[in-house]
Image (cartoon, rainbow over all chains, first blue to last red):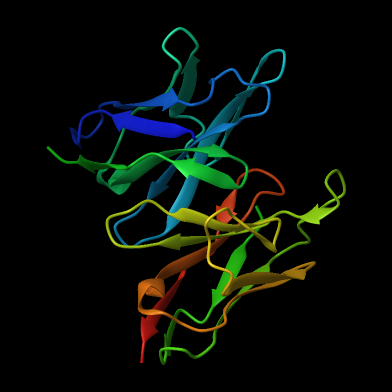
Length: 118
Length: 113
């Protein structure tokens, strides 16, 4: 059973960087069968996929065009965790952020409400 | 990007009656690699992350009651709840994983009439 435990600040100031971590148990971040995603849900409820990473002899990264210039997803194999960095945030980045595994997203973190406000 | 359009936005059904949610993709999501439709359904309750209910358009995730079924092909898909129970009150989302960006429908809120 895969479990994803998210951590990170709930309040970020405009123009700063949003950073979240997703600790993985029950699987390896470098598993050649897995993919690791970040998704966010706006206050109105819409779900937006932000990006993913997966390992197939090398690391691959896919990002949504809407955030591609601002996003970095990293996999830390030593800590078996995933991270999200989103820079130059604005209030429009206020959302609940989730990490999730798979293509059909079978396991999800608990979610982190991130508010962008001064 | 593949646009996922769900209908209706909300649905009120009597306990024990059938609920049907539709999802239309802007292009075919059939995976020739897997010979299956790359379409998933999720249930989300307040304060919880979405929970995978259906994948490959019709495969129930482990533990999902068999009153839930998924069907469809090409660009038109359906999630059906054969006999609505009180615990099924939630928002349901479809999602395609045929290509990136992964995209979701806008959600359908299911309530008890």
